Image (cartoon, rainbow, N blue to C red; front, side):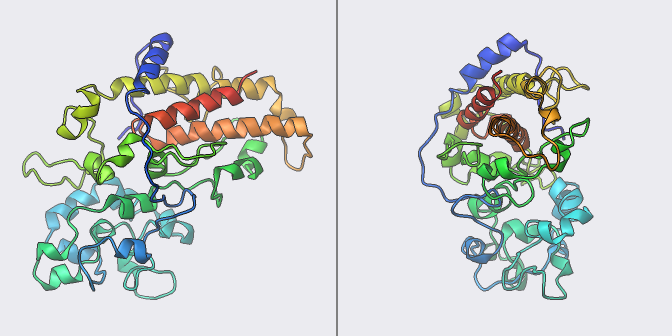
Length: 371
């Protein structure tokens, strides 16, 4: 599905709506549980004690998705059509590499889960049923006892583990952006880019990893119980059960009881439209769609490209060059702004996960790119 909402508002109207919309959710001060690959002081990673403590079943072992399908064929067929269940979770060969398998496997480093050293674990490659519901051996042995499986995934131990944001290459903190090697970017040209954080929903929700931000900015949505699953669980209209083909698509119906007390029935469309307008301003207009932004931040009418051109970055930022202090400051501003821009894009909610944090990231972009 397309992750970008098309905005049809004018720039002036969009900016106004943006300012209003970003105020509708107050930033809440909560104690941080920690996010996954996106860095920070506490990480919840797939497997280990964090995942083990989350499951209601004790002493169970991982059996693999195929055995779940013996009884849950319809659900498995649904799941195979989803992004996690097929194209990303299993079918993409790149995700079987060592650097990706931590998230793209089932029960990583659990005693009975997938690991990189023990043979006979191929049935646990990919994001299987037990990645979210916990090990299933007890559930099978008791012929489907519902008490022996975690029916509602615990968001912080499951979703946060893989959606904390994988920064570019091996960077663990946003401060590393200024020292990172970006070979594509240094060789200025049509392919110039910075890859921002990867699968960042949880880290974004907790307001982590903004460039030059010294303290987290957790959003109000982070205080909701089981927050990820509450919004990302779709129901099958025929059975009223979880639709495993579309479960990760967000439910933006703010008239629901869980949302109405804060949103008053207002939809998120106007927030996303305003964020899109700001992203156009910073990253430039998409060459293929004038209603949205260039996802690489290279649109000719965007602040990033204007800054790059005006500061003549391409004339001195090349492989092996020794930069002066002034030149390095220019490069750092460009990198930092590109990081924040890519972070907002990589979150894919266009502000919904954390409106206040989104506003701060984009405000910082504008500050860094002032000519």
